[in-house]
Image (tube, rainbow, N blue to C red; front, top):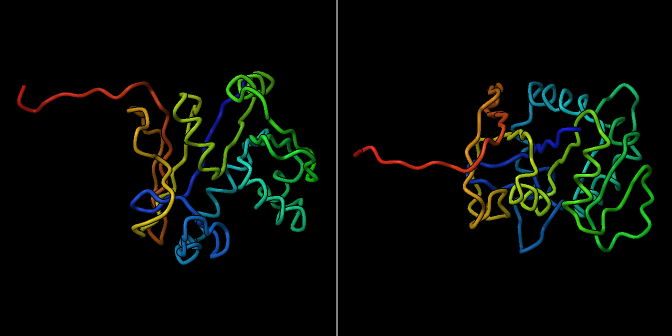
Length: 204
């Protein structure tokens, strides 16, 4: 069975919306797109390259899939694990509206999503990777489907925007597997969920 991993860029106040550019996602009037760009550095690039080297397949939400499909097919480079793996590896899209994806190889998951994801994982030996895909990420976290996740926390807060961890999510404890900080202050943490959060009191 494969491992489902989630990799997400977030601000200090937990916003994950439109990290890569001003027009990436302006829904709900979001006007701060591209907040990762001033902080991006070689160490972050090297980490992300390593993440993509581990991919066996990708699981994406519809919005992220459309963003990727509009860019990466025109920027393939066999020497670049990010570009090349995105183009050649299987892509699974959680969508009930995407009917004829042009970016091969793509399979649309439009049935009972949890069961379909489990079947995909069962066929893999390596990582089924989720990148961005905010609504999908929340769906997966709420059902304990994420085996491991990478949070790249950027030293900026925005005050508005879509959050990775919404109100009403499952209280979950995690083990920290790795942590590092880049020259420009990006804190990169790798976690493994280990079950429901526990609670106590210092007064006991």
